[in-house]
Length: 469
Image 1: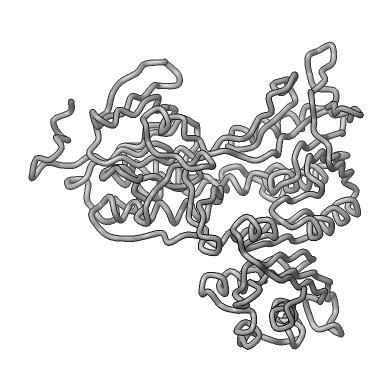
Image 2 (image 1 turned 45 degrees about the horizontal axis):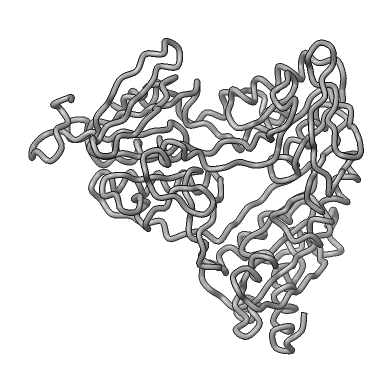
């Protein structure tokens, strides 16, 4: 064992080991370094990929051409981290955590060499892995998942080399609709095959239907209530189509947008506690439950939903960076907490903006909540102001108390970020009646006199008072 990190000996330098070099892991390492010098705390971080501190959320926009340079998605390079006295070891994968021995076993991806590194404190930030369907042809050339910059580069290379212009996206969640837009922007004919009744299962079906209609209006072919059963290949072994039980859809390239799962195989093997969704369970300080010197954050953990009171898995860079700040503070001897989330997310497909926060109807039912709903149609600006665009807002409120439970918004320019009003109201535990009095900014270029979110709140308050939706 490296005697520079003897646990429990006063006056010795402690060692913090970080598994994962993206948002949560490197935010934790950077925050710990801000609070403790290299003489007080040694920081060793392992990253199995080629890149660190990159924006996975930006990959669809790089693929689609909105971002013209891959390096613009990298917030901080490995060299920049090392310059801050963080021993960042790239292309090195941790393959085992020995909790009892306080050490991790790492493997050099290029050489295959393995070695052990001891730790006083450990951060697990292993992220999430794309769901890859277990079906024939899923690994054929021309089939791509999109999770890392390497994945994005591989897809761009395929799109550049491929002569045909037919693309199939499997799945219609955030990744699926964003990749559909990217492929449309590159001049492809796009078909989206979705096993759900409507795209964007994070919305209620009635709001998902608005997304469906808008996507078809953009020239995207939507195939719902259908599951891909196999990927068909040509004589050269490359993808030529995807097959469902009833049909085949020609494809020169296939993009998998089915979603992600927490990458917790290391944690599971080490006997660390996992939740119903497969993510690590932590306390408010992001410390792994039952482990005094191990923290976890980012896409590999489950977080508390402040509205339902249940644990959820939400893979978002915003949460990962906040987790890292909390972990780094605590690992360096300070104090910080991450109280939970309300489930806010926003996306777009071409000029359509899609947003949600809080609970869907099925979430409310699962939590045992009785609720009312209100759905309104309004505009992004005063109706008489040029370029005003329509938007639909749906709001859920608890039946007896009127407590806001969730909001979904679908519209054009100016629609998506309005969800932040609802996110703040949810976090504050406001009722829909209280929301009607919010002092929001108004001018005709920005909003009608009654903002659409407040119109929905008025309708929801009326539904609470009358007991009807």
